[in-house]
Length: 184
Image 1 (tube, rainbow, N blue to C red):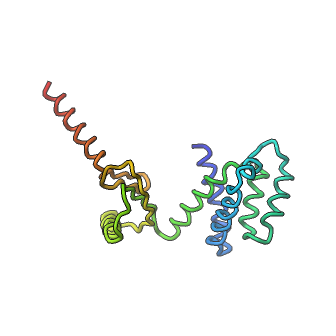
Image 2: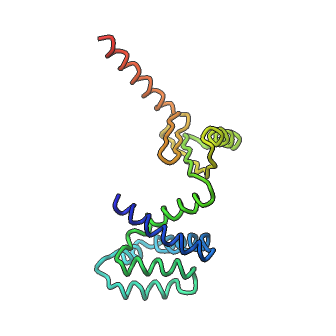
Image 3: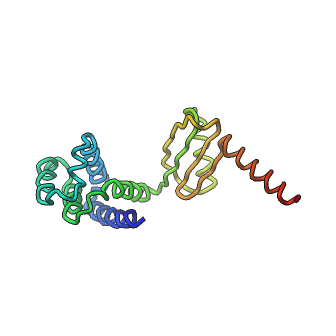
């Protein structure tokens, strides 16, 4: 929780700088690109987050790898994380930055999980109904979860709707148990 709060603060500061420079898309893209490049090799990630490696050495490697290739705000964000020994915050910072980008576009995340890929018209209809009910615009992420027997599970921020077969059976079971307890 403390890391998430700290990552949110860093992300907000970076987002504000990027917005002032009219470069939010570029900064977000370049931060993700830098992290994706690092993640390709596990040893690079270990190097980046290792507290025993000299900060100056890490900064030199980052400058050699990314200087002139990514937006300066993104590069300076990476360098700041190294300087403050907060390298491990980068994935959480990226998630928070993405949330700020989405919020700036007036959208909210919507995750729809189902056992199989939903036909496009069904997914679109579901999203339109949710948009109408909640008065929000959503950016949809569709996930396939073969462990679901059927139906869909929806997550909108803190709101979860379980329309899966397993979820309905759990609900039925709770109803039956509560009814049984009230009779005794």
